[in-house]
Length: 383
Image 1: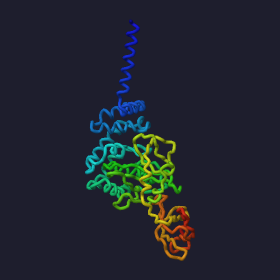
Image 2: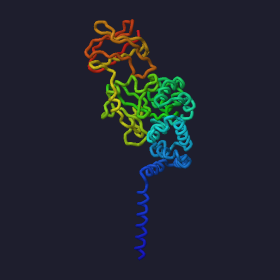
Image 3: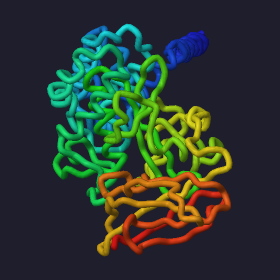
Image 4: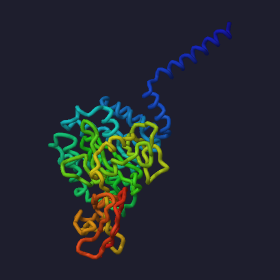
């Protein structure tokens, strides 16, 4: 009799534990697992969950469930609560707050970081600096275009391959005044988020022509729109020097596809060429949207791109020409110096098979090439 009672009690205990475990929703289970992985930092995360306003709690849970383990073990409650408070404050002050889906807010507005950059407390400073610029903007697109034109002159940060590292945080880039395309994109995304514009980093590890990698920015305005950071195109989005390259991306080739960062864990990592060993920054493949863009290269033509360097090996800005074999001018423009992305070149579109001469205008520095079926880069030396 005693043994039967003991067995019955044990079965009840096991069944109760089973009910408890299966009654947890997927989100609750993920949150519980994240708190366990936080180790000694768990009290900080629990404090953030306890003190966050009820209206912001689901967003806080999302961050904790999806943040990298290195953040679970390091971020303070103060950091997370400030990030949450300033996110919702900025969003609620916009005219578009009600039009942003909750999942977009959680994934592209609330996150405190983009990739693996240092975790700076940038929201308050960027809000104070940039909110006055966009307070009268009627849409996220209008506001983002304003920011891209004004943020970098205000912060005195420019593109340079001489930056200390690719994955600089906003404050690191501001301290040096120099940043890569990734560093510039981090700044623009954070500036957008600081004033209530959902934004995210986008990039490719290698263009399909193997000329290099690139990172740029997408913002949400009833769908995703792109722009090059520190490469404003007036008040318009969905324009940029890289459209031709992006339209040739390859969705099923990881090296040549285009990815947008997502904070949500989805099993697919964002390919960070500067930190290939890190796999806890996640991504969605957005290649198809860029392949659908119209390439600016006319039918039957091919791009001939021009780069000019000085004796020290630095890119310089000088007038350049592309001439036909009869001496007719097919293109006149200016080469790009170190202020521009290292893959951004003066580009002429010439008929395939044509023999052309590329030269520094009003000089003897020139090269004659045959326009093949694939684009080519012609490099000249400043006279």
